[in-house]
Length: 182
Image: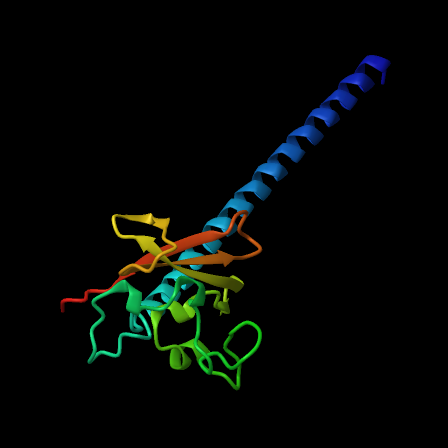
């Protein structure tokens, strides 16, 4: 074999190596994208479950059901949003375990704003652990995307979900509106 043939073989091997790396990189990127898409779908699902749970609670602790609130000044101050004394009597992040078969928030929280700064770990069989954190705040009546430092008849909850397969956290949100005339 001559020098020219050796150069052709070396060039062919270099081309084959480059092509193999490109194919492997494409396959890896495809699986990364698939895992991220699946984690996003699961994150939206567990986040929506959190929203559904929070929206089943009363609007505010001042709303007892028999007494209606006619002024926002009767509601919880914005700097006091979160569980009242005795509602959250555990430390750390809420999760389900063998001894704790449901999230503590289900039975211990009684109004919407108790979920402010609430943290939860949700385990899914395929994707593993998702970390969730809630933020609850008052919003401007005619602009639900604007935070309000004053009390209003609207509260917004944002659930932020983290997972190792997500490049950026997923956020889902909803608004609770107090209907004082019903």
